[in-house]
Length: 375
Image (cartoon, rainbow, N blue to C red; front, side, top):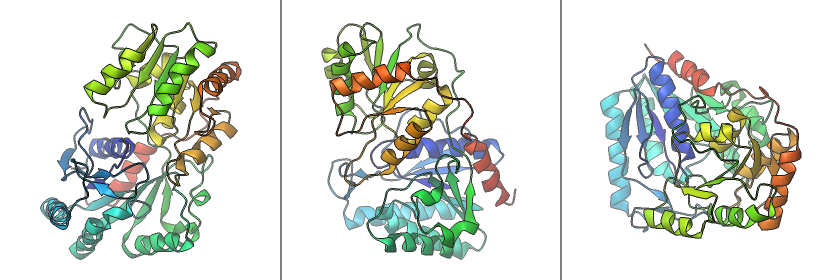
């Protein structure tokens, strides 16, 4: 059983879906439990999907939770959701429970996760494993890191860090790593692997701008349109992907603003194939998007999301830049001229080196999970 919660974008759900597919393919009966808003066309392979009453972040500061009507959940909603989750656990009786991010994130969901962890411990047969990305958001108080370690030591059999320590070691953003070092297993990066999927459209694009699945990419899309006439690729075809959660009205409005040579779409099922054939990718620096960049070898311009105290994407973008895998434009620097300049720089830069990073995290994670089952 894999629990996951996406709050703003859909990257966490996508990564959990890849793990569910890989673990199912390895022979396990997998239930993926999602607490975020439903996403269409989610590929979970042979796994089963259980949708909890959905919650999302109130805003980009992650300061609170909201239901589908934008209001905070009341006590009855939270209790019903907790009971639903515990019922799924009781019915499935899993050998392994995987919590995605928790306890290194998703503290807002402790109301349901603490009872879930207790249920796993009480069962006497369920191993608990954490699935966590390479980078954590920095905490202001050292005590928070100790709290995370206490939960890990109290409940968990392993911590799967989905990264490559040669690029970003976990202790770069988790200073209490020594306390749980014996439980950490680096898996390599977890990625989608659809680069060789059939190309569904005859159009090729020189520039692909992807805002991701969340609600924070407006500035990037608008700035890309301003940067295009100032860049060396002003006469080229551009594709702007506005994000899977965009409404039809929002897509229509963006299309009305786009000049000739620029296509606007919500998302592309063949995104990796489109990216592989492009000359430049422009995006934020989320985990999944950066893995697509590494996988396809496209030249990249990264504009990391900073939000309210968010440091994850800034750290990842900086490491990508240091390794010659991307050019970086900060949110503070973002404007038409600066983005156009970054496009021109990345076109002149050497091609990104191949095979620098371990990207076999899905299969490695599935093997570790399977080692804790009775199968």
